[in-house]
Image (tube, rainbow, N blue to C red; front, side, top):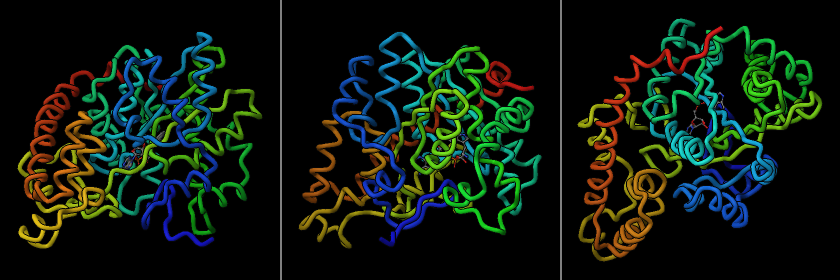
Length: 373
Ligand code: TYM
């Protein structure tokens, strides 16, 4: 069946059908039983789990079996430093932080300045390296535990990564890489090798600890193709296969199917935006309301397509009761588009002021977090 959407690690196009993706990628939906098990260990489920923002997984049941037998897991996630960090990038890090806190887990965080050099037309190696350290400030500002969090730029930790990457590279044919990542004859050979570099941190905790260590990867579903080749290689290398938990995408500001792009400033709110700029972007964002206020009052709006309602639901309003009320009032027309935009803007501005303060403080603490060869 022809898909009218496309999700790869480098491109998200069209209206994403998440159920279809689960089938296509061969992942599994998060079941009520799995959520119950997570709740048992965490006290109360994070709202991103309760609301199925994180909706899919690989081997989470296996990971919890091991955890329940006393085997701790390690978290692994990352960022491709192609520009400033936006709210979509932060979304998986919110749950990663929660998982670190609730499961007392170490986190390995990869900054792929090699990847972004290789696949960008305009960024040089120094640019992506500099952006790695800028993006690392956002990671640190999220409040990860410095004793348990290890961040590295591939350019600075290349020696360690290279030897581990070779193991997956040798077991992955070009034919598989083409099928999984869509590479063709015009793809540079650096990019053809790169998936093995993103696979490498899955095996790093095992190598560092000298014993097989379970790994859980929180990320959006676009990164899943990497785990497919990693898991195949792991089975043959005698490593545990990494487990993964997948989030859906926070939509771009221009509508429910719009994507965020670092090169389109109005498509996303960046952690470096001034509060005024962020507020302006939100006020201009796609609305699910009717064309005029009078019509909106009469017929109501659609919270499922409204950007502000969705941002509140997916990321910025923890209180289920409040979200329910906002959605009901928006649907009935009692709450206008301008009002809901202002609600979101207040939340985002408060978040940004605090995040930017912590981000500046983080400059002093980089050494506590960064791994280097
Ligand atoms: P990157 O920089 O494209 O994305 C960083 C993280 O953000 C997620 N993401 C989103 N999540 C929700 N809504 C969105 N709109 C949205 N856009 C991006 C991505 O899934 C990712 O989790 N090659 C990777 C870097 C990387 C990595 C990893 C990511 C290296 N190792 C391990 C995840 C896990 C990249 O370019 O990510």
